[in-house]
Structure formats: structure tokens, C-alpha cells
Length: 461
Image (cartoon, rainbow, N blue to C red; front, side, top):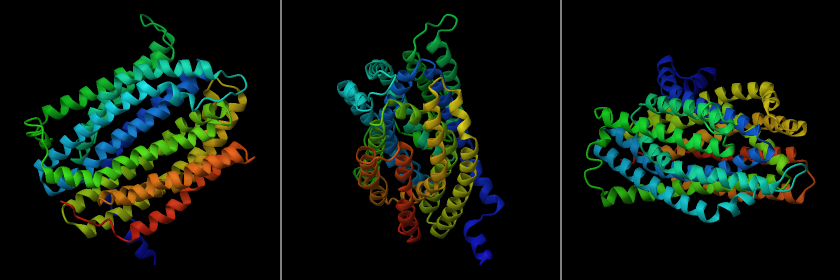
């Protein structure tokens, strides 16, 4: 029994060496990114509760946009990893073209929506709370949003390039670009928020401007490296010689990718609705959630990036026709991800409560954030398994299944649960948060049976 378990779920040194080599740069990049977001959150917090709530609200809206862009890039990645695994560089080039067009289209739609409905969208999250002014928070939010829009295009272009680079196994370059960008962001945050040396004191506008500058720098580094290393990025051969896509390739990507693109948008919108439901309990709740989410993101990066690696490794095996190898690698990667996540959850539960003490907010908000962090830690291993199940199904092109598994589940189960518990029960907000997070167990059961069924073991190219 033990031998069978070990053979199924535990790999050899070579397996973990390859997996960790692929995942480590992605983990480092995202850790630095989230750590700078944490510092940014603290610095904005010095401006008052309204500033924290404003930035958190705009970032929640931006999260929906970012997932739309990610979904557009991911639609091409379904085939991209398999084309690369097969050695078909021309097919890989066509997936890159699709990503570029799709991410830019999503960006222009996003800018249009934010320009027209920005004020109404921000106001959805701002509720009266003792000692807080929704009107001032809205003013800060509009200032922040107006500047953030300038950085949406480089963000989209970077996603198109970076995802293709990662599909070739070159995860270090996006990591380095991300590190440079977040270091720039951190320095400029301090200089532009508070006014340091020759820099003006700009408050929340300074935080937004620092983010925009960092995005342009990150995009520039990725583009310059990709075009100066053509031997490693063969998908760029002919990428800008003509602009069309073969009808069959476009149709394949669209059929498989459309549910994925729609899924990312609907899932992010669903999670925003969950946050909006929490926010009816007052701006204190929104502020505490912003703090706890920022801290939780520091711990979540391990399982998020380990899960993302599944789509790369498994996708390459599937593209090469190595179905049994894909299944074996998937089992071992899921087990490793959940194990690592459990360790991170224990650390987060034990020490997460120290972080809210850094914020310049009322004691009751710190206490609320601490309890949110503890709840998030309890459910983190469940989130890890769901995340791995999602990427397993996606690697085999089962995008309609992932659509049902992810966004439909969010809108049918998670969002209504949050809405009903927050609006129509007398439960404290921490218990509301606990039960809403606990819906992840249902996804665990669904994910287990879908992965075990092997419906995702498909070579598509």
C-alpha cells in the first residue's frame, strides 16, 4: 500500500529538480510582486482608511480586467505548450499572434468600460461605516483609476510575450523583468506617495503612477530580450510578417479558448461580487479584507505557481503524445503542491496575525483582518487542490469543463452564498467569510472525480 502510494504520488530527484527549476523563478517573481503590493498597501494605509478602501476597490475592478487579459493569453497557451512540445514552431507562432490580438482587444474593451462606468463601479463597494467617508474614498478611487488606465496596454502585451516565453521553459526572464519592475515600483511608491527629494507628494495618485511606470519597464525588458534571443524564441519567426491566422488554427483556439476567456472574466467578476457582498457590512470590513488578502497573497503564491506549472509540464507531455507520462507527472505535482501549501498554511495561521499590526488603522480593523487571515489559512490546502485540478483539466483542453468547474460554480454557489449570508443572516462577518471559503470543499470533490476520470488526457495538436 505504501509502495503504491509512493510510486503514484512521490517522484524521484530528477522529477522534483525539473519541477522546482521551472517553478522557482515564477514563485520568486510573484513573491516579489506580492511583497511590493504588501508594502504599497502599507504606504497607502498611512493616508487613512479611505485611501486603503479606494485603492482596494480599484484593484478589485482591475483584477477582473487582469483575469480577462490572462484568459485571452491562456486561450492561446492551451495549444502553445502542446505545439512547443511537438516541435511545431510555426503553430507556436500562430498562438502568439492570437494572444497578442486577444489581449489588446480585451484591453481596449476594459479601458472603455472603466472610462464610462468607473464611478458607478467603485461606488458599489463603498458603504457607510463609523469614522469613514465613502465620498472621500470615491474621490481617491477615481484619481487612482484614471492613472492606472495608462498602464493597461503594456500589461496586456507583456502577458502575450511572457506566457509564450514560459511555454518554452524560459521562466527566468519574466522573473527578472518582474523583479526589476517591482523594485522600481517599490522605490517610486515611497517617493511619489509621500514626496521624497525632487519628487512631488501625490498620495494615491503617486501609487498609481509608480505602478504604471513599473509596467512599462517590465514590458520593455521582456520584449527586448525576446527579440534579441530569436534562437530561444522561434515563435517570433514570421510573427510580424503578415497579421493573419489560418482559419483552422483560429477556429481551434477560439473553440477551446472561448470558454476559458469567458471563464476568467466571469470568475473574477463573481469574486468581485463576493467582495461587494462582504462590503455591505461597512468600510471597516472592506479595509480589513484588503489587508488580509494582501497578506494571504504572499502565502498563496506557492500553490498558485506550482499549479500553473502543471499546465506547462503536462501540456508538453500531451503535445508529445506521452499520455502516461502526463498522468504520472500530474499526480506527483498535485501531491507536491498540496503538501507545500499545507506547510505554508500552518505558517500563515501561526504568524499571519503579526502583519496587521503594521497598518495605521483602528484596533478593531486589525483584529478583523487577523481573523480573516486565520480563516484563509484554514482553507488554503483545499484551494490548492482545486487550483491544481483546474490546471490539469485545462492542459488537456477541457475548457468547457473548467468553465463549469470555475466560473459557473462561483456564480451558482459562492456568490449567492456570500450574498445571502451577508444580507439576510445575523452571522458575524468572520463566520460569513468562513462558510463562503468553505464552499471550496465542494470543488475539491468535483475536481477529484474529474481528474481521476482522465478526460483531460488528450493530445490536441
